[in-house]
Length: 114
Length: 114
Image (cartoon, rainbow over all chains, first blue to last red; front, side, top):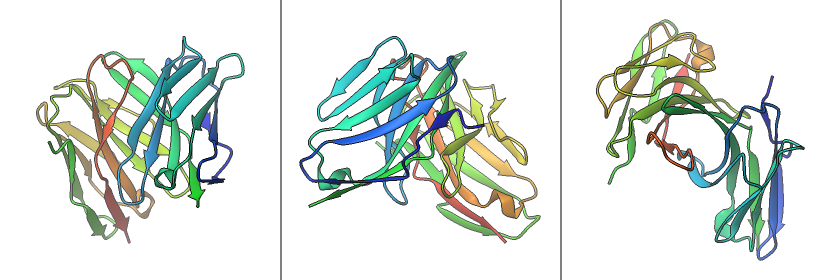
């Protein structure tokens, strides 16, 4: 039973346009949501996160929106650049003592074309 | 600054063989994690260690054991490898009270069990 879902396996966007990646979750106990970027043969790298008590967080070209009532979050990349081409994973966090357990979606492959 | 390092990068095992995957971090993080990633799936948590001296099961712990050797090192052992354990294994670490819940990932170990 997938608690975090990314329903679009791939997305193609022209350079300079906006990329919107979506993520849905089912568990109301998640207290933080994160986006990771992954290149082939490398580990995931952190992009941006948002607390469950907020609805927007912005960092440069990256903005994450959280709609808690719909259990939905999205990552906006504006403007998209060719270097943004990678697989993007949505992850949801549950604090357990002093650690955080992450539950990942299956990823969306973003291709930014010239 | 090396961050999170993993050895080996690649490994091929025969069914029934054993091996230990090594992970070390130099960021003075308290918590460490082991994930696996299978094709078309997100990362899934195998085991984690909230602090030195503690370990706990994640989502998919069967067939694995872990050791938190000290604050820096967290190893994952396969006692009797099975083809279903063919996967890419990622180690990660995090600070205790990071406001973003960010985990820092290593480059991964690609394991094939024949």
